[in-house]
Length: 303
Image 1 (cartoon, helix red, strand yellow):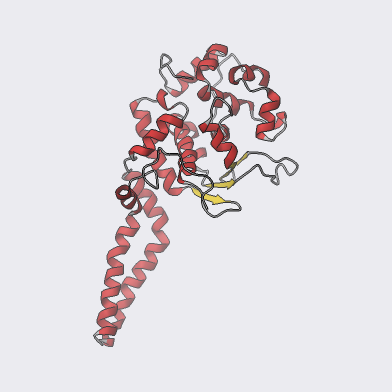
Image 2 (cartoon, one colour):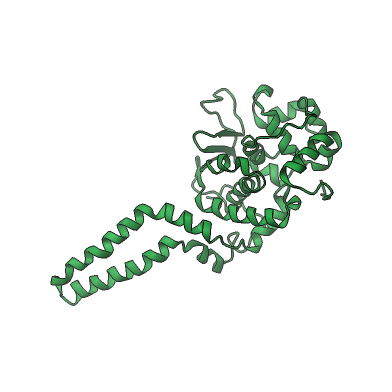
């Protein structure tokens, strides 16, 4: 069962066309394995169907090669994918343009880097549904796109972001060992390499950005080291004027007390999510972030 229905912008059943889906699934290890499997089948037919048992020793060769390939295939596929990034399908580009905050700010080089990193994250990030069997491809794409965005624009934080290799997903807010008394919507454990989301809240953040904070961006923004820029977003009340979210509404949505909310990560989230209001209230910080990320400060956005 899918965690929610994908919107109509997707191509067919997935973010990719059927042809692209098959091509993307043919990793290097699978391309190597295919002739070995055919060889093993041919030898099996030769030995057992045509009754040549004296040649059975040759069956050991493809079996050993397949066993070796199985042991090394994760690293082999990762390196091959890094050298041969796949072109993103048009449905994915539509998603980035429509739902990824800050995508219009990227120059051509940054977009190329984002597309490459997104392809890698989609292949290597493991999604762990909690209490259900399957996660919609849209949600996987959304999480990986936010990771790829920050990876592409802030190389100093790229390693920390890439270290997040697992995403646990609940349907609704959840308690955890860190916050056992709070049903909260998201959490990040850098040293364990895992982020945790309530899918309902996370989806609202990018589907309805004027109504809800973007929790996916907020969690991964915790890994971005912000430069010192003089003017500060002094408190949550100041940031509330940017987003329009009252402090009590913010804490209720995140499910955590105010002291547990990362102010710097929230500031960076609002910089992308409510750029016009952010630049109005915090022009010095906004200008510093533009310079830090290499954005054109004159780029106009609809939000």
